[in-house]
Image 1: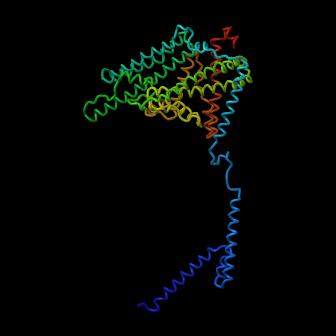
Image 2: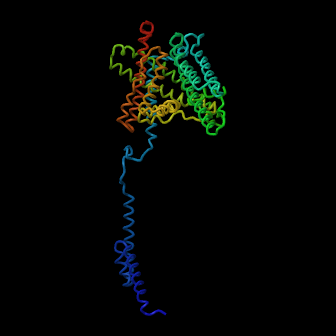
Image 3: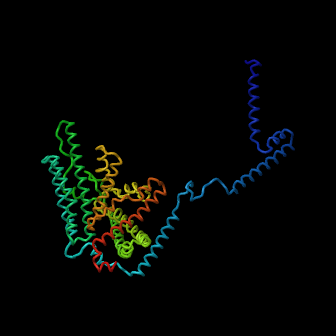
Length: 482
């Protein structure tokens, strides 16, 4: 049994809880509900008053909600502002494409009305051949098989231990040096090789030089790893790679410059994909030739006189006229070579790695552009040139400069030798390389595009002008045509 005093605290606690809950319920009432609740104890009239007050509260709440819905202003940024989260500019992109097509259609029609049809299949053939019975560039490409077989034979002797590493290195150095010098001497000494045919042959030999250099390095790394395993296990291990002519020629034709013992392979050949790439190759190369003969050649011819007279206003006008077709050719050639052609070869050989380019069009610096527009060359430079220099103690800036001059050498090699003149224009640093040190984001990207659109036509005009002065100025027929 509990005493009467025991009920005292409990009663007081209950009373306190009741009062607190009543207060909380009273606070929740809005706009006069408190007074109406107090009138509830007074009778029917009080309840009627409470109903009216609640109805008024509901009406005022509906009006506030309706006002909030009718409100047309809020805190937000304009869509074209950089602070806006809006990202869908597809309509503007389509508008740019339509304007580009219309403007170039007008230029194309103006060109046809002024010059007529200039595309001639005989002129296309004459770019590669001077004599239809003499194919010196093709013969040069066939001779390149000798250097492939020398590298294969050398690697077999090294794998078997028949020759030492030093002897094998000397053979490789001699073989790679001849690969660069032999076609250069032939192109310079043989007048029957056209500039385009010479550039094609030198391009094949340049690719072969880079491939065989990678072939040498990877096989050497494999031998060093095998020897290290043999020493650690205290027993003899044979080299775990196979030197076979099939794998050698697969690598020669594969769309990569970096050799591996096992390339990633796709499961099968997709005939639909292969035929689409073949159609693109045919279509786009015909477009390139048409733009060259129909658009670029007349502009270049009309640019020779202002260059000789140093008429800067007319030179600037010719430069801007040349910028559009030159850049158009560059874009078409990029898609034709790095997407259509390399994917065609990769699909034919079931070569799995199709990373031939990255998003170079978003480049904010010229360095990012060079690293992403030609992934096979970038991978080769990083793997066989840049990182070995760093491992030998060279600084980062020195290594980057060495890679730049290495790339510039081959650009000049592929242009100056076929033209039989040396001007070293490829060693001039592009303007965007300097501008990118001060500009970032959209401004840096615009600077890169400006370098591509304006810089290349300047180089083209310089080379064509120098070639004309060196080889054609004394020819009255060519001088009259220009």
